[in-house]
Length: 454
Image (cartoon, rainbow, N blue to C red; front, side, top):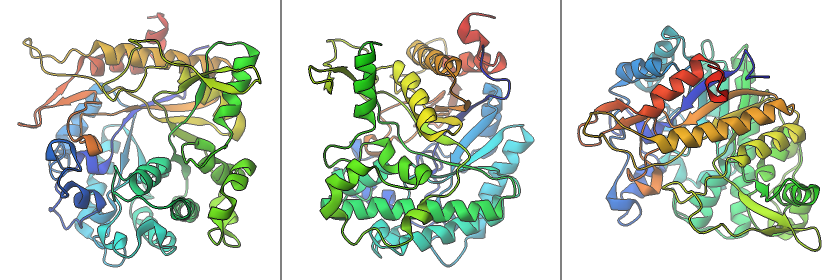
């Protein structure tokens, strides 16, 4: 068996990280604009004002995407480029930009996959309480309505939110991401719950406005990995992945179970019981639980565990020198296999890998090329594990490499490079990396090149 004939190969990026044009075209400020102006919050004082200037270099960038051979491009929409105050007045110039983006993709036979929210929350709505305010559900619904009315005739593939664990946990709990808050646990849970209800309301609107809707979301995969493939280690890793024993948001199923199964995990409700008081209102779970067409997730690594004497998972300490990315994330290719297999089995939906990639030290060499063999090897290893999951029965419809180009890496500024395309941030010159040319060969062979068959 190879990759399915209908398999889609793509790459991804996010609005705040690449668009720039922070004060062009009527765009309003968002919480990342706010955080970037607070001294000491972003490495080296960087900000997303320019990003990679994708807003002004759209056609050239789309030509590069075509050169890579992308069959699909996952992009996100800037809420404040459409609704500068988050609600109310619609900015036609912003909608025109996304018209040009979508039309340009279609003209190049690149299928659009749109994400409605990739962390750039409107500053005006943050000042009204943000996600902690229950009105955020209606605000997100209004935004969804405006976007899908405009783009729904050409965009069929939609994701509501990217990595709610991160924009809630890092942005409202840890304080390292925008808006930079450190809520107490009850308020953090309320924030997460409101985001989930907003997801469900958004799905209903997409379904109504887009006749051939193909809808999912993009949570981050938090997965424990069996140290060996013994039945004991596999069972311990599975239970660790899908259990809640303490106050944490870093569990994929905390968000996915309500979306797909219609309820929070029972053990989570016990652990969070007092802290959830007054948060879940009548009808909320029905609002969250809307039919989805695929289960998307972002996957980079995982925590190795083994079965202890009692059968419970025990973390395995990494061997010194274990391969790691410049994000200091351990390279763990088997996370792709186990996450894909387990999420497909649990949710019984086709899987879409909405993000996967490597942060690396890349630069233009003396020969004018960008050699990034680590990215090629990393992606090759992870895709082989994805293929193994397919062979073992998982239905996987698409893979999106993160990211299509180097970009603003949130609180780390421009100091981490994930792209298939190198960006010189001084000149904004683009250079296809060696990995981009390699990925083109993977796409052209529908993955056969990975398996040594071409």
